[in-house]
Image 1 (cartoon, helix red, strand yellow):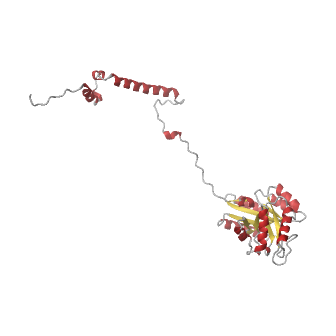
Image 2 (cartoon, helix red, strand yellow; image 1 turned 180 degrees about the vertical axis):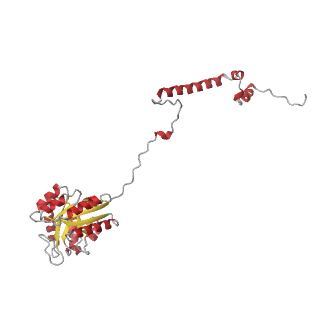
Image 3 (cartoon, helix red, strand yellow; image 1 turned 135 degrees about the vertical axis):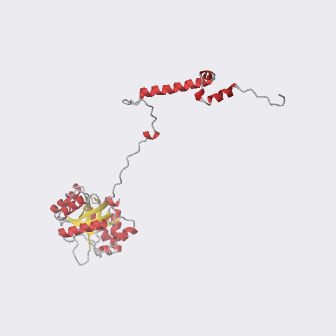
Length: 307
């Protein structure tokens, strides 16, 4: 009919596309009309799947009889390190036992303690050298217990540093005492409640100690001691005593001093304790104290704390 647009012939490809939209209606004749390229792709794909199944059956772990193909998750091969529980930080306790150089039997009792501590040895006494040997053999820290002038006129001992000493005399006395005890790593003051308050004298002492590679521990026999302030000014590390354990040589005083130690450790990271070799009853108190509080504190040497 004139004027009616002619219908364009429908291409075979468009016919096949319509039929493939409904897989359930594909007949044998329709399948036979697929191009060879499509059949090739389908056969290769099927061969690949079959090859994968055969390989899996061959190499799967023994004892696996499930028969199903399981694709492992990528996360299954990720091995995360075990999470460690945070350990509580234990506070540090530095213990120094003063006045070694007298009775060796008392010193031997202290050296039986199983944790690190220091022994401060008085120079020029009959048992100074023997005490030094015992301390070093026991693996403890050896220090010089340097006599210094106190208030009140007490005799601090041979070679004591006095306020009347010149700078040269101070250096000579201190150097002689240090040289008499080979193997010491630090110095603290014996008495010295007056001498340690003199800035000019203590500056000389600290300079000499620093020059020899030693540390200084202020026994803090006077609240007016200048040692720590001078150390801060000169960037010299100095420890300062917090608690005297045996100001009275009684079990009751030992207990009170150790309770004071625990109170201070609630406020500070470390505490410095000083006892004396003349108080052998303190040994078992310290042993029990360390055992009872090992979970919250540890004894360390002075030099370890200063590192």
